[in-house]
Image (cartoon, rainbow, N blue to C red; front, side, top):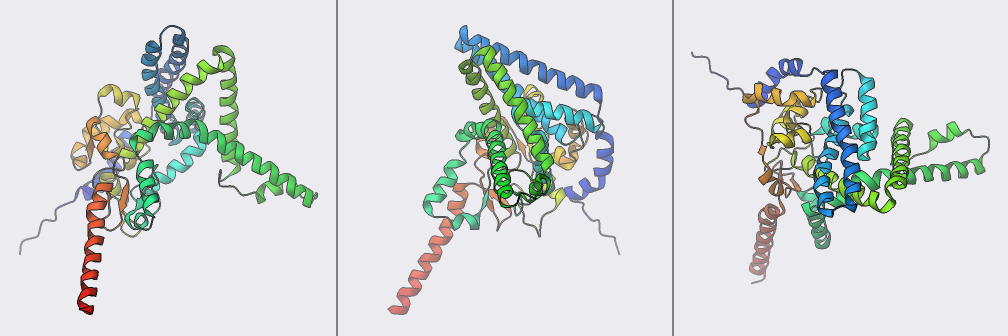
Length: 392
């Protein structure tokens, strides 16, 4: 009797070679990391200075400089992202220091952000636990919404609204949540002290609950980020003028944030993207089928710190950005089934905003209407015919 040959799936091959792949490429280099830090921070300050000063020369020149600056701010965010994973420098301390600096430059408290981002990595593709930056609804959840809320859900996830999302993500929300949470804490302390003066501030701080931070270490990082950033705003306003500074700053960070949201979304929301529940979710399948390879021009790969090789990043977040491309090229056969998205595909991919929890994939609103509203109509029609026959 012949032995049957068992054909290995892409996931099986990935599991078999994962250890070798990680051992080879999860190696950091301090000199490379330092060079990346310098070639990100120096252009950031230089371009901001030139963009604001150019307002008195030509708005067209300002726009041209700002386009490059937007891409640099996006690179700043990606550097912060790598530091959050502890994979830019060899040791924790430089990752923490540089991560904090990058967080100030893009307006995001790095430590707090990295804690939430780690949850995304642990649940990638498990849409029962994590719904991405667009807070995706399942088909069943969407069906329960009133028609007005369904239309609002769809319109709020239009790619054209990404700059507003960027403004909220980089500029408004980190300041607002810190200020509001701090005010709530002060009011709580005052009320509790008036009730019982014997209670210590330490004990009261343990009793305080908020949805804006999980630990006091997170709050300390939020406070440090905001105090440094707001101080920088004050100095910049004094030097450049309030209007000139905030005109450039707001536009640049909002558009950079928009690009970040779009990139992050299409890396996980695309045609037939892997989207399972708790019971059927698999980490390796999620890395291969629930994460895309964003095939960008070489220059844009530099500005995005190779985050387009997202399938490898989700396979192992220990691999630094400057090793992702080499890993992708050497182990290309492992990633043949990974969804490849090019610039021309971005707008289309951004339309996948519903989780089809019955089929285990992401779908568009058009697909929802075709698949589920037609089914509902047929069901209603059959029920109506049955009702007529019973009364005929």
